[in-house]
Structure formats: C-alpha cells, structure tokens
Image (tube, rainbow, N blue to C red; front, side, top):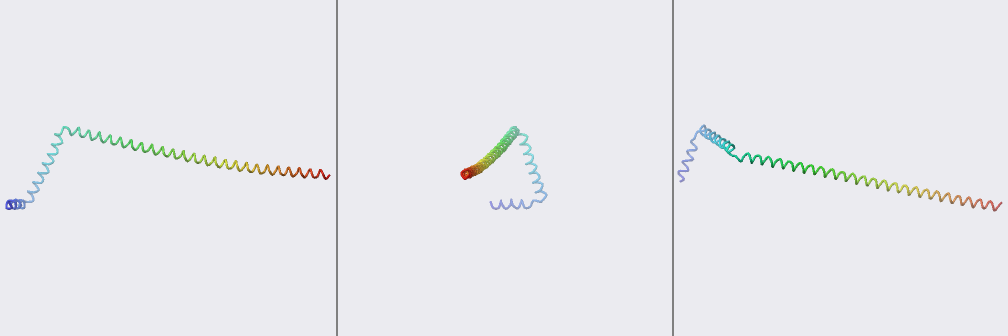
Length: 133
C-alpha cells in the first residue's frame, strides 16, 4: 500500500505546470457550469428569492415603525419636560408674587400703624395744649 501511495505522489510531481494549469481551468469551468445549471434548473429558486425579498421588506417596515415610535416617544418626553418646566416657572412666579404681595401688605400695615400712632400722638398733644390753655 505504501508503494502505491508513493507512486501516486511521484505521478503528481511529474506533471508539468501547463498541464496543472489546464486541469485547474477545466475544474473552474466545470464548477461555474454546474452553478449556472443549478440556478436555471431550480424552479423554487424564484419563490425563495421572492420570500427573501418579502422578509427583507417586512424587516425594513418593522425597523421604520420602531424608529417612528422612538421619535414619537422622544417628542412626548420633550413635551412633558417643557410642560413640567413651564409649571415650575409658573409656580416660582406665583410664589414670588405672593411674597411680594405679603411684603407690600406688611409695609402697608407698618405705615398705617405709624400713621395711627402719629395721629394719636398729635391728638394727645392737642388735648394737652387744650388743657393748658
């Protein structure tokens, strides 16, 4: 058996470069011819191709729907953020206005109290002047 093996190897080594090239070219041509025949002979090939196209279109439609949903969610979140910021700004403005009104009321009370004390003081002074004469 080893003798047969070594003879086969010697036969391969003795082939010329042109012969090996020719054999390789014939093998490639045979493979190409077999591939083309398989493409033409396969009746379900077209059906498989249509199925692949349909699956790819469905995948693309799902991806588009996901992107659209993501954009809508992002827009909704941005709108909620704007509404929340507007509510906070409105609350801050209302709180500032309430503080300002309270401060103005306190100032008004202080001024009214001061005017009342002055009026009472003037009244006492006038009463004293009236008693003196």
